[in-house]
Amino acid sequence: MLALNLPTFELKMKDDGSKKSIFDVIRRKYVALTPEEWVRQHFVHYLMEQLGYPQELLANEVEVSLNGMSRRCDTVLYNRDLEARMIVEYKAPSIPITQNVFNQIMRYNMVLHVDYLVVSNGIDHYCCKMDYSTNSYTFLTEIPKYEAL
Image (cartoon, rainbow, N blue to C red; front, side, top):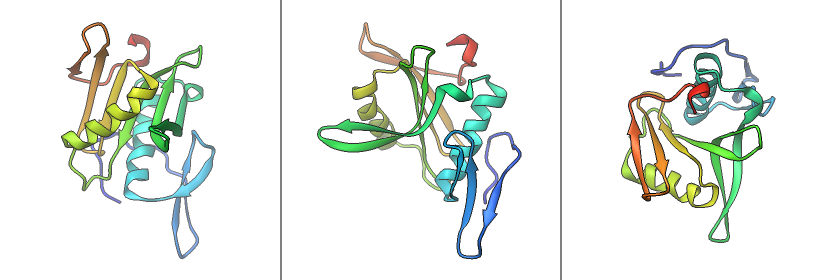
């Protein structure tokens, strides 16, 4: 897999000959190793190991209902009251981060109303803080540590 603009971590992988899998510490199971999953696993470990996000407050593949259709947020961070605080959307490294990617995460946020939106393709990472009082958002220069949220 491609080297990412994220710290490395101790990988747990399986290869049964026909497909490769990577262990997802959040879902506690092996999942198919796709380019997007490669980014997700690196980013989740970055959140936990570098930025102090508690593993028990992170969830992968969170289902939301949007306009009667079922959609899945890649990763959601909750607070201790189990209210969603952050949505993270991942793309494969070969997929550029465009306005369409932000539109996708904004649609998810219509349901969850979080404080932070993060988008990453493993190379480029963007984080914005929502301001619901002015119906606007501000891009941050870095993803905040958990203690600063």
